[in-house]
Image 1 (spheres, one colour):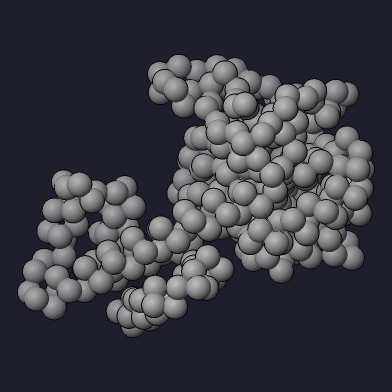
Image 2: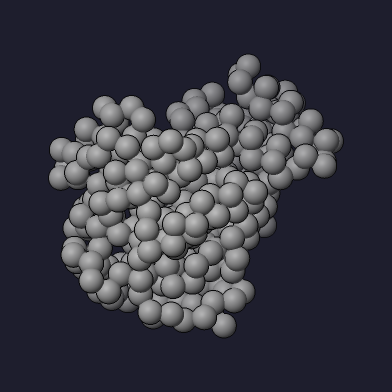
Length: 312
């Protein structure tokens, strides 16, 4: 059974329709978003509730900014408080711990850099779980492994609250432009409730069933992306070594069957040996290690290429 809004297609494994868990929430905003079915069509959508956002790094900051610009009542937290200043200046509230954010909000999003941080922020001494209660929702949009997602799910569900994992496909620019892809799994009613928020931050969303499936899909996507970037990097280096212009190689690739937006976007800066941080290399290596631990030959290729890129 597919769960979807009238304007954004999704994929569902199992997804019974249930009422919103926030019937009496106190903040409403409406925003116009693009239809995934038709780029020309737009529809107004509403979300009711206070929204918390934990983690304001490369990805979290633009995601929270987009929610704030859409008119949502946002409360933020970050380990380094100064990273909250921009959001506060735009009108966001600030709380001094994940517990306080979760306690004051109807739904809380978390975007952390690695599994250890995601667990600590959700389940630690001052973690969000301590501020959760029945009727609240926790949406972890961090990229973590399935075991981490299930651990956080247990801690949140033990409080009577609802949990959704929703890792994103996309990096800094898509986050800024509200063009992320959400890979959601967990409580179906929470998915439906936060769908308007996901549509503000992203261009599409998929419901994948039980917790762990979102993490699995994200790791598969990143494994494919990693292999593409590894072969692309090797190709650029090879073109230079045999006396070809790598700029022309990028153009040739863009015209053929192996064309991909990632090559066109990343290629020109790679040719110039310019690597502005959009998605740190250490995170990509972490994800490839999680997803390809049983493929040592592939891992050796990725690590070798990464090292060569760093030298160049």
